[in-house]
Image (tube, rainbow, N blue to C red; front, side, top):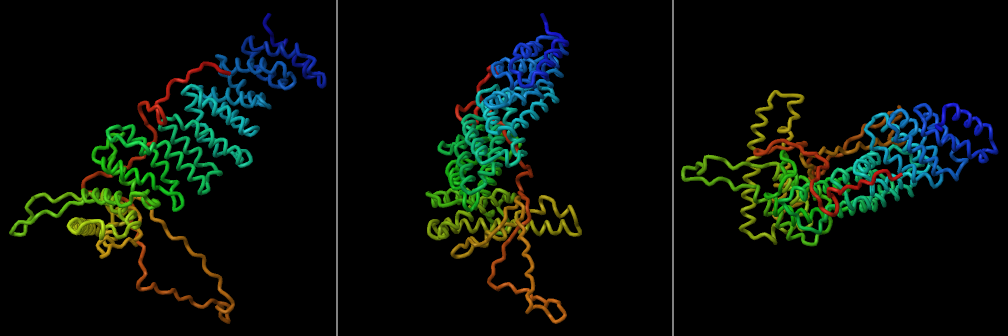
Length: 520
């Protein structure tokens, strides 16, 4: 016989009035559990009554949770929402893991209001037991269906950072990092980026040692022990993604040596044959820009001379010789060589950064003929840049505002500084420059010194401070405007995340189906 509304209210009254003798009315609670088999009204009441008395009947705990789960899967969305709203009330003791696991599976819903309800329920049990809740989430990320895994990772990437410190304790953050490393053993490109967002925001990893651990995590994903297959767009995309994730972690204490070494030994020799993962992407420029951004943080390198040679050779490839002149002084070719400023900026900057570690490279390691050839190319390139700058000045006469902020205006003036260093005999590596596409670092304002009594005049005013003159030999730090310009390429900026294709077996793979059906 089906349970009616009257049955539910009558047995609710029995339990509510029982007080200390509540556990003696097991039959009354069973009637409420049976309410999930009734009509819509009975189910809505059961969804509210079951959790209210749940803790008083431990022997019926499994039956109560399963009854509530039946309501979470009901065809009526309003019943599902009510049942989900009450689920956190079951999250006590050992049940926290199970409830978190259930809620994580319910993230697969396509109903927006229901999805928001699940999110709210997960956040509420986080505040009860963060580690237990994370256990349920990571259980589904590691073993659940793909849609559940995807949404659970997105939940972590967006919600963890909103939780207060008393919830995300050191122990909890260490648990997140340990579990994330397990997930990283088999991820897609998009998952990798989201998970790096999760662990990069953990307070426990903000130290030098913590950032080094994050770099190790990225190195493992990048698989730098394997040679790069330039014809495989997945392999190229994987390297780009990993390098982008590692870049913000590098500093004077966290070195980029392994990435810089890999780029020199495996990427630069194959630069012209790299297969772009995206049709519009200038893959060569993208790779060179990443190398340039990493090079200032490179530590001691085992094969420094060999890698400088690779960089030097590649730099020569992008710096043409001046056209030959015939007897009447005119060019033998009607077409001037194209000057690829953006490419050369990256290469000359990287060469300059690594050259600091072996300052006698151009003197002792490069023969006189090659050095002469290099300086001829460098001089021709610098001359071409001066011509462009003069043309730009003419074009900008009378212009103001936004006209002065265009990509062409923010051209690669880096060449006015670094070539000068390399022309020195012996070459100098003292100049400090900013890559044209990077924001210029403004020096921090120095707080004014509070005047002492001796500096105060009789009227209480301070004596005029005379600014010290710069030393004659002081080197000025050059900060060119951001941006790039090239005579042969466009101004396309690539910022894609994710998008890996094909199976790899380890990391960044297209994971197999994890369909398990209902596993509550």
